[in-house]
Length: 355
Ligand SMILES: NC(=O)c1ccc[n+]([C@@H]2O[C@H](COP(=O)([O-])OP(=O)(O)OC[C@H]3O[C@@H](n4cnc5c(N)ncnc54)[C@H](OP(=O)(O)O)[C@@H]3O)[C@@H](O)[C@H]2O)c1
Image (tube, rainbow, N blue to C red; front, side, top):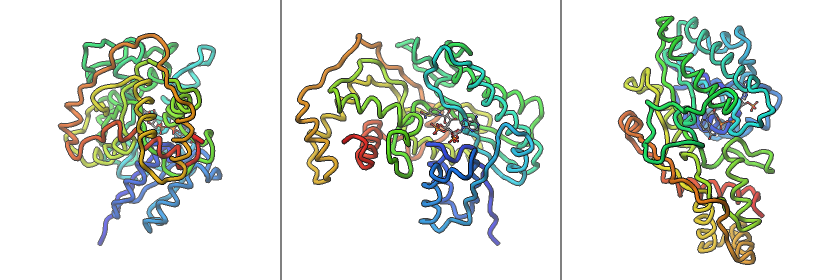
């Protein structure tokens, strides 16, 4: 008889969550429950239903509306699960100083507390994966150019007023570690810290407003290159492919050596935005393609003529020490970031967002 194990993924509508669910459904012995804030907003999780249908996995994917700030609702959805991946969170890379930081931090903490209690009380959960961020490890603003950042580091600028999102992630990481210790919790945990994720979104985007999170941020840089022929000399954050981050989440479920660990997921070094967008530009201009949408973009770039790097000279890019990632998850390694970047740009082109 087949034994199914149920994985609850909070934030099924997210950029990363969709990729994780996609990869979880490959395993025919897994049932996936994806939580959403509004089950009537079907557009947000249409891509998941399409994938499940294509893989004839419809009966193994359940989408459930759950208020993650409500303890009872969280306990109900987690009660028979074997694994939980908690990634639902406000994602706010830059904050307007007039915004109340509590509006970002409080939901992060409350939802994480509820998930932890539900995992403890379920009697069934074997492991919790908590999705944190590379921004808990280094500060994109004041990093040391000579240091290779690793899991022992903490972002010194992650204060509630300056970077509430990174601050909230640090608080939640500590919450997971302390809760586990203090409750002698009957489940294992892994904390994963990806840097800035790129790569195609699952499903289509009809307009810029359908782009999510980091794919939307990156789109603004590519659009400036296409429309104005410009790229900023500023250093990028650490970068990684969303499909690789999803794969590490799935592998972490059954990697015992990762239990209790905090793991940085990143390619080894950052870059600068101007270098990145100028490589994209060169690649499109040199492309020998008969794809109509790419040809239209190529013509647009040819007409525009020049490219200019603007701004002050940047610092040297941040370096990352990913020894732990490679030790725990050696195969098949991370994609090259230039391939990831081009796959993201192809996604914009296919969805006619650059024409
Ligand atoms: N993107 C990156 O570069 C990056 C890098 C490092 C770490 N991460 C982490 O990876 C995870 C996924 O990020 P993403 O980029 O895929 O984000 P995303 O597409 O913006 O999705 C965020 C998810 O969290 C849900 N959410 C937001 N606020 C919530 C709240 N108060 N209560 C319940 N759910 C809430 C959203 O629901 P709705 O769809 O209803 O809004 C959505 O499902 C997050 O934990 C993020 O911090 C992201």
